[in-house]
Length: 544
Image (tube, rainbow, N blue to C red):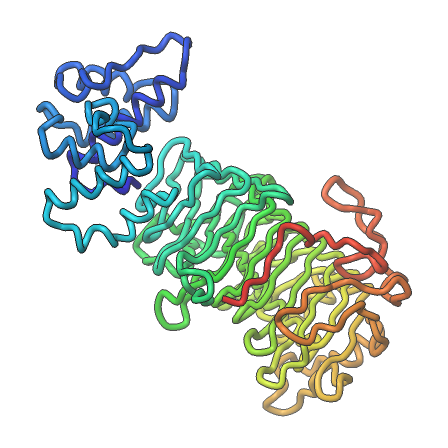
């Protein structure tokens, strides 16, 4: 995870981190570290490393264990090497005697040191423009490989992902409000089962996960996205997240703990994620596998993902105040027995990309596998823009999924509003595992009034179930929802409804419970007539 290249330089950098970690403990009974002695006295260094490796402080213990693996039994200050280390870290430079270079300002002194080191090494042309070297002096830090113990990513740096970064079992990654995390090509951030993340931004300081490509050149799929895995029940044995090497057990998820906690993701944006690992196998913007009820996912936007915006594999994680914009496949996709709750969800599909707003499965092979997918939704708006380029459907429910869909506004899709596929899915209605209420559907299909596709012969994929007849009794069709502004392009993001909107009436009662906002007695993701949307302030919609 360090961006210091040689083994010796990495050792010196980690020793410096150990000194700083001890210094932070203040007067808590830990020793003061004589850094110059630490560098030049192998016996002193070994003694301190062994003490650190068994420390009760997680940060110090992790450093001690890492240093134990790479320590060498020689002095570390050796002429030209000192200059390389000094260039890597000006604080180390001052400690080991490279501060007397005249009186220029610190930034100038830093660059003079770097220039001198590069000239001595004969690598000026190559190293000066190295991405890692430039990032080091632009307030960013490259992170790669495995993370252990307690990790803190602060907002004063930009954190750059190189390859798949694994937060390993037992570790916790804490990300400060306002932090920017950038993913390079082929990178992703994966919170493994038995690890956790605490990424709690604020409306004023959201956490942003985005592409490392320069603004103006970014594209969906520039990097892999965020993956959170846990121990909650799934209906597939030995479940492993798609998009990773099948032999890597760190991609496994699922268990028996319905209250499992994958961590906290709050006031966060995930942009330009979802790269294709190989044909038809992509990571998503946000992937949740086997995450349980103690996981918190609130106030999250996923923007311009190459595959799905959010995909949920089993578990019973809840979502609240979620915005998905411009997903290139499905906005929200679930299977493997997800049974969570969702309130306040806004989906916007762009006209040039995207398939379904919802694509829902239970299990592809065994439609009867349990637990059966059965999420519960209230206060949802699914919007598209009558694409002339793509057949976009609001909801595809198939392969035995259940679900409960209430107080929804569905508007502007070029395909059907809802398509229920497979006899096993239709059977969920009779079983009480699939239900609808308070649906408001408008401007669908050709001419804006072709809500459901007629299916006959080879097109009949649900045993003759008639969606048009069924939803004529359970949904309000055809009236205008009275949006304040119609979505005409990808730059339009006003999701408000007029105060006079019919969506203010005929809502189903919200369930009681701590999770639910029982005052949301309207259809759609926003109260009709509201001036300020819950998306205001922390979301963004970059084109590239």
